[in-house]
Amino acid sequence: MLRYDYLIVGAGLFGSVFAREMTDAGKRCLVIDRRPHIGGNIWCAQMEDICVHRYGAHIFHTGDEEVWQYVRRFVTFNDYVHAPMARCGDALFNLPFNMNTFSQLWGVRTPGEAQAKLAAQTEPYRDIEPANLEEQSLKLVGRDIYETLIRHYTQKQWGRPCTELPAFIIRRLPLRFTYDNNYFSHPHQGIPVEGYNALTQRLLEGSDLRLNTDYRDFIAHHPHIAEKTVYSGAIDEFFGYQLGALAYRTVRFEDEMLDAAYSQGCAVINYTGPEESFTRAIEHRYFLSAQPKKTVITREYPCEWQPGMEPFYPVNDARNQALYHRYAALARTRPDVIFGGRLGSYRYMDMDQTIRAALDAAALEKSR
Image (cartoon, rainbow, N blue to C red):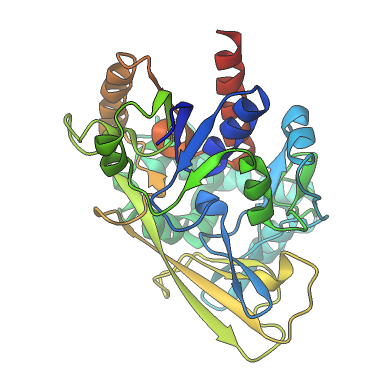
């Protein structure tokens, strides 16, 4: 094996952007990933002529102008606007919480009427200091929105009653007093016309790549393969869980190919009631402009993470945050390793945040 400047563990966005930056700076990078594909959770599979977001819907959105210009070097973005729906029982509601939602829920027509209704709903909880997510939600939006659109969805997502979840999970709930169903408020939004796979392929050009490769096995056989390691896997796994295992939630995906052009009428519907055990259904045809004759629905079933599963969401409660900080202290004793990405930093990040973190980490390396 050749010696590299950087061994990059993980071919997702963080690792791929870091590899692009350091390759352009004249460094030699080896990227490894335990999965059989690049791209991490933004990888897309092809089912007949439909591009399927294999690990859940990924809509790129950002207010970071530098990141926006950066990704547009590699792919072209369409004008997709994310406007999901929520279903509770037989009722459908627009998301995010906006005038359409308030009208559907209460029959109000004007921002003033909606604000008055919200004020009446939140008044009983105005002076409480929220001790859990339920109390935080009630203080922010009142009983009707909480019961219809938050409680059951959140409990399915986290596998715990809202009364057992920390209040800070919902620090705020955006309320829009306009008839605007655009989920994101960022100025830039879209999906790569060429697909996310093309984005990561172009980011990784010039780097050596090994898939189906586990870091622990690989480094045991090649301990001196690189001057420095960039690690975007789970930080507790890197340290052999020596302080204990961090908690994660994962998601099981079930696909259904339907012999029809359309099914649910929009890309994403959140199922916020207790009737279904899945949290949302994705119809992938809406992400790109192709017009397939069939359609694919993917349902998402959150569940507790177990070894061998893909960790998706850090459980950022007080216990796990305290444990992570202990691992972060351990990480500071390893100046030969850069920890990054969603799992390396034990926090959920949108795509633009992941790219920003990788660009910043690469800039710091270049300055050394």
